[in-house]
Amino acid sequence: MGVTVIGLGPMGRAMVRTFLAAGRPTTVWNRTKARADELVAEGAVWAATAAEAVAANELVVLSLTDYAAMHEILGAVDGALAGRVVVNLSSDTPDATRAAAVWLADRGAELVAGGVLASAEVVGTDGASVLYSGPRQAFDAHVSTLAEIGQ
Image 1 (cartoon, rainbow, N blue to C red):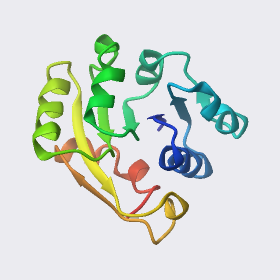
Image 2 (tube, rainbow, N blue to C red; image 1 turned 180 degrees about the vertical axis):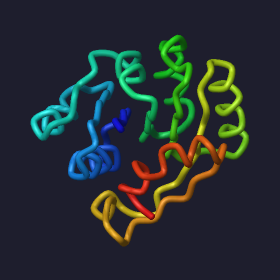
Image 3 (cartoon, rainbow, N blue to C red; image 1 turned 120 degrees about the vertical axis):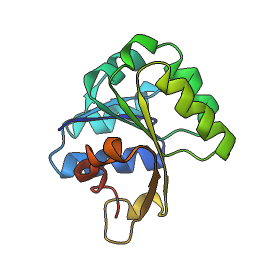
């Protein structure tokens, strides 16, 4: 099953490389395209727009600064969100997380919020842990993919 990763800072790039190493088809998008160049050379698929990236896979992993960045990016892709599971591994407040869950649900998507308890260098190894919260069925549908980045 494929995965989309939006946000290609150090953590996002580490997740993409981990998914690729596990043989997962991975679509990527970032506001600064140059951050994707090495990943595309390693096998990731570049999406020309955030909407194209979201539409590419049911599972969309966000590695962004906060929920404001999520709203800025995904606000323009409303139609593509229906049927997607959005895993936001960004940090923010509980209120922002709850508001994002409602915002995504209004667009037909489900939010699984999470936090990576590792540095980018440790992602994908036995030393990486990730905490998740959200609808159990949404998490369970993608647990094997999400397990690639950490236990």
